[in-house]
Amino acid sequence: MKIEKFTTWIKVARKYTRITWQRNFTPKENQEAKLIFVMIPGNPGNDKFYDHFGERILEVMADNQFHIPTEFYSISHLNHVELPNNLRNESDIKHDDLFLLNDQINHKLNYFMEYMPKKTPIILMGHSIGSYMALKILPQLIDNGFNVVKVLGLFPTIEQMAFSPNGVRVGGMLEFFDKHATFTKILLSWIWLLPDCFKRFIVRLNLRDPLVPECVIQSAMEIVSSSVVRNIMHLANNELQIVKLHDDSLFLNEHRDRILLYYGTTDRWVPAELAEEQAARLGKACVFLDNDGCEHAFVIRDGEVMARTVVSLVEQFLKT
Image (cartoon, rainbow, N blue to C red; front, side, top):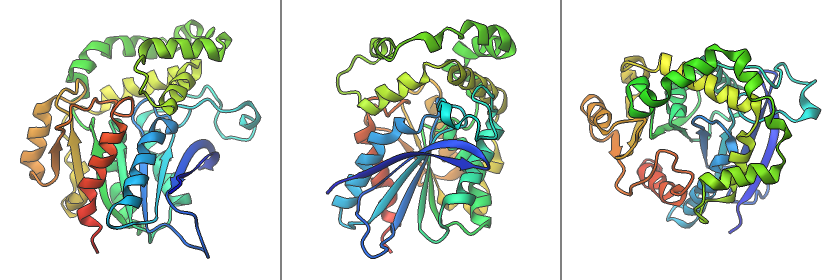
């Protein structure tokens, strides 16, 4: 069984966006997918961080008892992947434009409205702040007729981000660099001079494990860009300002049965007690705690484990 993979730039509300999509079947006679996974990234929001994870999900879906023709889509955040030179004059955004959390949320909704089918069952996944985005657009997707079977938040940063250990540690720095945008732009202006071999060296200093998937290495190299780094910090600072108290509007009663949240046990962005509080609110059938020691940035080393976990969480809802 071969996984087919495609990476391309598309326009979403006239803004160029990179997406990667994969499938575990070769279409014959207009055959279409019977199930679609859509991945909203965390921050950084590079679509290709999730290549290995998506590939493993598709392999499991092909090998399990269902043999379901499945597609996996990952959509980048606006300007979290540097826009190619040949597209810069054709897009409604400039390569160094900065985007806030609400911009990225609307961007994901627009992507669905322009490109996703409405009848095919969809598993909408969000990682970290992507979980917040997924929950935000869920009511509108349902109202517009999309067949969203489940929303799965992986290591979800959906409340109290600024009060988490990592939020406390980096909050002041993010606020400073975001507030002093001109200084930050000048400080990072030299990055474009770095050759790819040196970018790879920098990435490998931090990701030394030989088992780290190549897609993660390549995506991390793409982060080494002035405009991308500034967008990462701009979004992160905005997240800390907005994602504070528990937001009941993310869990409307009519949609709660579609929501699954998966928490880590050593996550410094999401303390374990938040999982307990969510379980008390939503019920233990909606909240799961990781038993495999997976990291918040699971795509680095735990993509295969998480792929099997995701399928195990949703497969009971596919037996129709």
